[in-house]
Image (tube, rainbow, N blue to C red; front, side):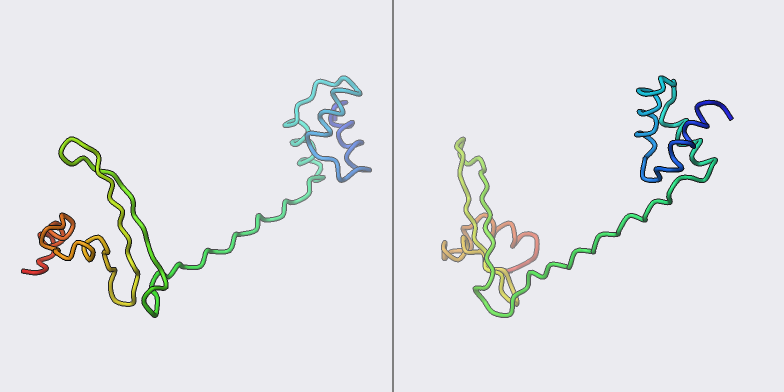
Length: 131
């Protein structure tokens, strides 16, 4: 064995808690030996002085999120976005109440005329509602 390998083994045997990088730094700073951490790792692996790593713990899987509610008025969702109407920005504030059966679109409800609401017109075109 070379001088570097013997020094690595001499340092590791009494101090099993020393790691690869600490040994390589110690050899460079104290003994002025040109050694890389990879050479130290290879030497410790050949001499079977490396500890086996603990397996990384697996994280718990997140629980599924259920958005359905048993009674009305338990959960609300809001949506805010801007769109261009007539060359100006218009802000749309939408509030939905999540109920057991449907989502209530309060912008359509407040208009009281779903035939003029642009969302209801788009919904009607795609799903044959109110036909």
